[in-house]
Image (cartoon, rainbow, N blue to C red; front, side, top):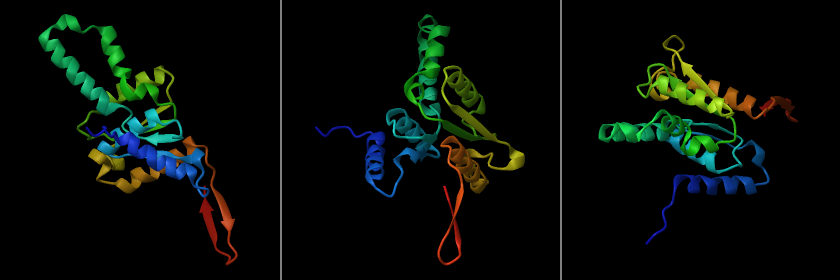
Length: 184
């Protein structure tokens, strides 16, 4: 029987590769996932301590799976679920083990639920996690699922956030040909 390969194992091999390169600063590695990739980025950030920052779903995918199971259990026998279990379910899974700063971006018109994201991120912050949430309003665009209405705006916000989260400063190097390059 073939061993099960998890997506975070595959991402871990890429991190190994980058970590070993002399031209890459391993302390500046971040993961960024959109859509289902956000769930994968969450799982990767929760398992690999070499990740300096993450832009991910922040555990929303896992949270929704747990809430689905809770609703099914309530239909079977309401005495199986109490408020203590609900609180534990909220922070269970990969979210509780992310130890780097992470950002969740959502569009206000995203059908996946801004209220769920706000509740989950509030619980994460209360637990001392470096969780951040940015909801893009219709007026600024980027408010549809996966930010399809203005991905450039969202990427600009995300990369500015990553630079700040990893405490990177912009420098200007002047090349021999007189041109300048901005680096981080």
